[in-house]
Length: 447
Image 1 (cartoon, rainbow, N blue to C red):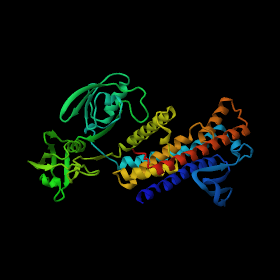
Image 2 (cartoon, helix red, strand yellow; image 1 turned 90 degrees about the vertical axis):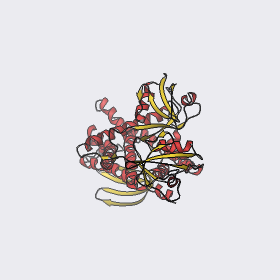
Image 3 (cartoon, helix red, strand yellow; image 1 turned 60 degrees about the vertical axis):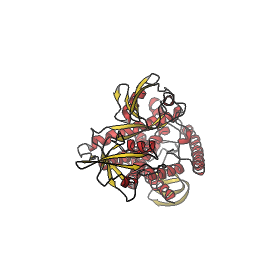
Image 4 (cartoon, rainbow, N blue to C red; image 1 turned 30 degrees about the vertical axis):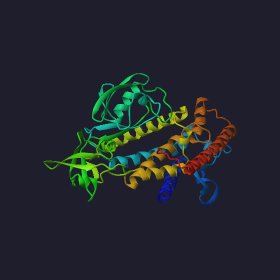
């Protein structure tokens, strides 16, 4: 039931984002002296409406969008208050205002996330591990295994996922020397990243995990747990399991998984004292939490972005997110991302539920992050040069400018947008059926 309730968060999120989008159009139309005939949330048929001045404010039955209907947008009116009577620049500002509001909303939300985000110190590095190896991939061909730690790539120490990804991309189609650590032993391998990998597999065919290199701290030890059997206490720092140095929680968990059912020696630092103890590792690993039953964290002194750094960090993260979405859109167009990963409102609800259930962050931070991504998506998609979208209408304004003020006949432009709207609605219903099928079959966005 909680999953269903979490999915419902998508309704107010989308409702607010669409409302802000349409407010952008509404404000810019009024500033240009254009009469707004209807301000609608949702798509017709209309279920409620109230006239205020020249404008009808309405709520409509299909909760999949919104609109601002202005005088003259159908090309049939040259009234001084019609859109047709305005300059190309005024019409451009009107059409772009909706997406501009979504970009502004996303920017402000990112600012909130940056201001509240606790970041690890800049000098803290990460250990990078292989979480999964895809069958028949370059990684499998050279013997990489889940649980391997990647130490070095192309002669550079791997201190983060980014370092490894950079080396893989730079050596696509060529041999890449990688140093792997497995069970305390180092070995070197030469892998050839694929230039054009199958969708969802990556160039080498691995899924990576990374963890900060920082002490593993014991927060709580329940009585009669395996951790208590080893003599661990609250405040201890686990330094070794057997002969293996432990400096991150992933290495800790992977060592225990490799030694399931075995007796292991646990070494910990307690103040100035080094303590050791033995315990049996469970044969069956729990799906959540510490296999030994303790509550663990990492001893990291997290820092918050200062007020001086906040604007620059917000701008940097905003454009980084935009670039990531651009790459995702390019992968979708090129076919590298499968079409079944597209989601409509139903799929967005499922994704929202899954993200909330998996996120360790407080609910409000998770919801702000979801709203940020959806706001950017709404802004970008509306600017695509497709009929019926704001970007498609902007394309006709651009043609008008290129033709030195000669407009495309309104009836022809209207026909193009009508066909585009029909195709768009058909696509939305097809995506809705796909979303329902995913739910019925038990599919997940996070698999």
